[in-house]
Length: 170
Image (cartoon, rainbow, N blue to C red; front, side, top):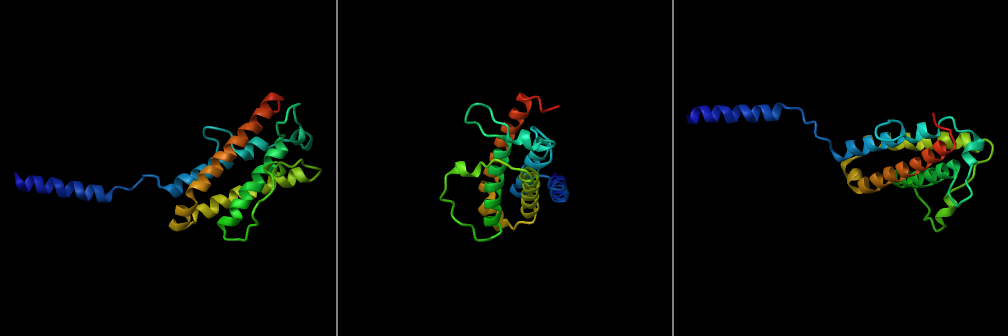
């Protein structure tokens, strides 16, 4: 009986060691969230799709309240996601002492096209850097990256609301 028990235990140990570990880790979850808020449509529309096809005029449209335009929301996301990106890369980042309202800027002419490209570029760089980050970087930045993806998803939801409200969404 002891022999059978020993063989069964050894078999279970061998099977346990040979199974591929498919459990997600913090890094893989963060990368997935970054991609979901950028290009992968899972539970909600990602930013790239949310701003696709928006004209300059549409980007600057505002209702009669203090709500922000799509362009202002995009400039706000660029500001904070780029500020975090520079800090993550170890670049010198000036302390922001201004009013958060200053980060919501209206687009003029080529600015809108440049803004959409810049946001895409920042989000792509975040994905690549996070995929290649060390355990120490992930440990230090995991909460900030998670908060940033939630912030991005929140404002993308506002963009989608504006598009749907105005019939600019298919």
